[in-house]
Length: 80
Image 1 (cartoon, rainbow, N blue to C red):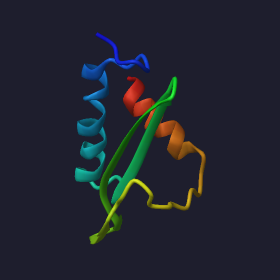
Image 2: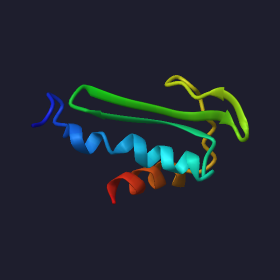
Image 3: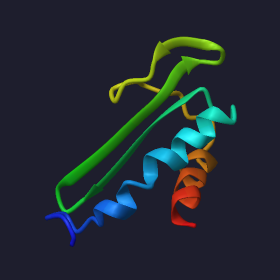
Image 4: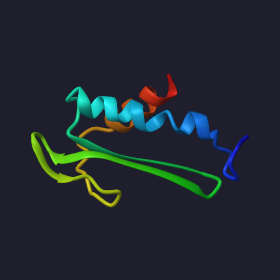
């Protein structure tokens, strides 16, 4: 069954473990992922703001994006 925004709750539930794996492997210290469809928003905030610890990432944490390949990479991880 799909939510009102057209999400599959089972597939959406796969997002956090996939992203948490990137943090656990040390690919990034932390991240915020936001997906919006038909007015329904899903946000995941995982990890810390700096390598080796620091403040936890929150859903309103601001990041400097040095390359547009990073958002594309995040999409690729979840889309595969």
